[in-house]
Image (cartoon, rainbow, N blue to C red; front, side, top):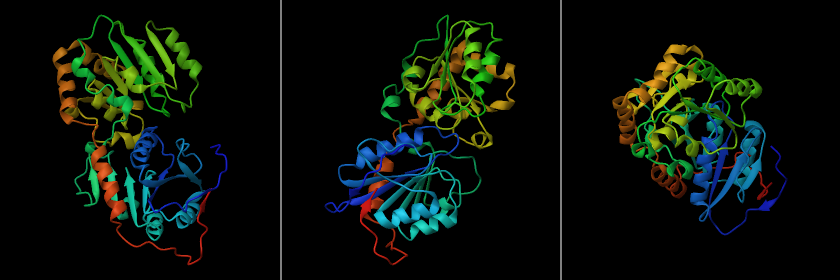
Length: 360
């Protein structure tokens, strides 16, 4: 991250302070960053907001202050300096030990999508990504798709699938495996599609952190008619709104698809994604499990099913539409404001030393 150094005094008129920490997590793509930006803009008028950035973190949004740190010790030191009233964390799996350290410094802590022991001792956890489990979640966990927040790009095409006509003579398939596509499912899927004899327009979206040889994928695309590769940057929702069926990973992308109400086939990129419970048949998805294990015939049949069978297409769209997904912002906003105004505890500086009231 190339962040120019800057020093900004924070002794402003008394405002609640909220720190936002997003760290890189495999396979989650850009949604955590976009969610954090939405939350920051919502509260920026009456809350003092600071982004906490470590190596690999997304760049802080324009016009918001930030502090740079390294490692858990750096995070603890930074929090002791800035003394936020609330810490929002979207950092993947956390440990109990690290969160216990932070609880000594911050009155309230809210986590997003934490499958570790640290989430169990946070004050509140929004578990938008979730698994099927026979165990009751802790009382401070909000589990389910209801907390998903659709950004403005996705909201612009909300329920567009309900208004779409039946697929024409050249149906459109959009393929996206997010920002990274570590397992190169884009290449694997296109290789299978090369064997499909039915006319089909194919658009493949390649994320900015796609780590594989792009020339191989582009060369294969040249060998198939009506096949296009679009590289980052692109508007996923805008491209997907033209699709008759979508093939994607099973992280956050199915949530965005469900807002738009478009038939969708899901391939998990890894074992973790294979455990996620949202993209299932009852929610309007065809989930084929791990992408690296899917057979060619299984994938092609799943893609063609909603294109050739109108009742199945309508059933998938109806199930997605019935979820009412994408409007979780109000519940999240309300929780954040509550924990800002009614902190769970009195935090203290465990060092007992004077800390400079300055942020770099």
